[in-house]
Length: 401
Image (tube, rainbow, N blue to C red):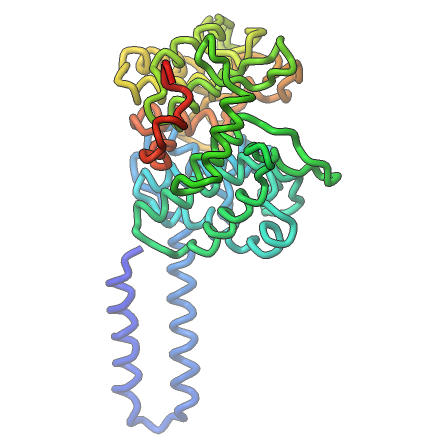
């Protein structure tokens, strides 16, 4: 928005009113005219705000921009009426990285408007809702941590305290979810039951809450004692279930969150590599599964690995994965010059033995496409929250610690 031009326009309007003030019109009429003109100008600006989109966007970025609804929220996939808190936090970070604060603010403003009714009153924002922002369902702690990460990016990039109250409320809520053993509750189901401890979400809470204090130290104590395989030097997800003890996303996310995490953790993710035929094109590609059953290629996770490899300077590995992801790009069915990457290459199971949703392999997905965008940009959203003042004795992931 060009605020300078707006100010000039308003000054001219005021000058015209003053100039004609000697005419025999009632003062109230002038005030009403000013109010009407100003309202029209503001309405015009608001409509322009809804259309903020750089020209000549790459097709994948164009698709992401087009997913944003008038509510400010982005649908997770085309024609689904499904909105994810995690996906929208990622989108806000991407818009900030793209230099488009207006788009990011639409997302952050929506959640700010729900701060009292959801975050403070109920505890946490809903994990999902419809595209108009209603019918929210269950509270996932890790997704709330991602929203705080997005707010941290906004504050750091624009040196703004616009969302300070929201950030503080999320910080307080995440801290309140900590258990005595240092772990973080996974969230709250719709029936009020507590979601079990989730390693990935705990990592995100560690990254999202600023500084390094007893909250962070407690998390590291828990992870070291309960979610660390000292033999392999990797984080674990479900130690009680040997078949799904390990999860692929903990490799790139752990490497992104923890300073001096050995690069080997990324190469150990080779255990999840497998080849599948892409449902839509039939072309065979190789990428990473969610877990050890290797029945599907998780394209969002594969993009996370591309981001992580670039972060350690292995641009050859990153570029190979980017080229693989580009073989799965799908044309939008609703927008011209728009493409996105589906959630998975083929239909199969997600983490564990739960089946993926029906369109996971045949429709562009926001999370996969945004992580692919991060990889193309050479940008790791987790590096902002890295802690560089952790005592050496607390960094259990360093060899011989």
